[in-house]
Image (tube, rainbow, N blue to C red; front, side, top):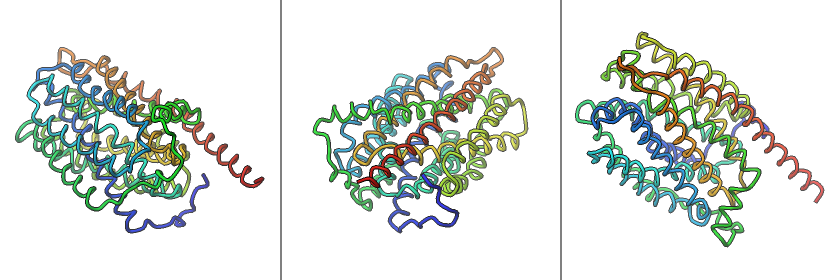
Length: 420
């Protein structure tokens, strides 16, 4: 847990650099698949004649199915080469994304999002397990920083292109494009990525059910699971309705949405690696605390915006995403230290499941809080902001407890080794 001094971190090997980029691409594909629903919401709702509550169900259906899939696969997550497991779920994810691109009705889209969640929800946990397997603890802040740049890249590249395709064809075109791009990534994984199977040499439990049970009931893990669930609420409550808020409340035209996402992403894409280096250099908790303070401030400002120039909207978005990054990256680096290698796959699968289930619930709750008024504006959006701020404050104490638990465990291990 001792921070690495500035400039004292080991460089990535050539293969580690390749893997970090590949994992970032996978996160890009999964994040974009979820994030694209937010800006397309303003188009999908009138196109399919659905309400905010129904759209919230579309978003949460992905999350709930992803969470259930994570729980069901946790028992076997450490029994296979992680590369093979990744290829299986990634292939299903690409095909399900293509299904979203051919959906013509609300029930068809809802079903497609369920299937997409079943496969896509597990990919993030496999990515995190591979990152922890291939990168030492003192490098994880940087690798998490690289992986999380996928979020910014989805804004710089994915969302503007997706909105462009949607504006020039219809809302289904971005999903078809994502499926084609995703298939290309799958070929690279199969061709260039080495097996990730060192964990198979460690002692394994014979029963998959018992492996799941022992992981999900381990006291050391429960706090991490609960913290992850709480940290998820912000994005799932705010993002699905952000485009509707910008268009209907702030008067931003649909044609300007790509510009907002492009400029915001271009400004924040550099934040991930910088925050990752700061995490390794100065410690995970200090960086997380700074990120929480920025997030709270900017969420309150964002959810209370009125009719303001587009430059102000972009500035607020940039600062809010920097705050979000400064929470996500150090927490991911911190939580990667919690499980032992033999349970890393199961832990990450359950952790991702908690993230998706909590996100689905948050999206569903937000869909019941907000509504369209007679003037067409989105109502009660500030209430969502207050909930996000409250969860952020509670999460600060929980993250401190996670770090404290790791410190105590490491101290016990050192004493045990010294006395052996």
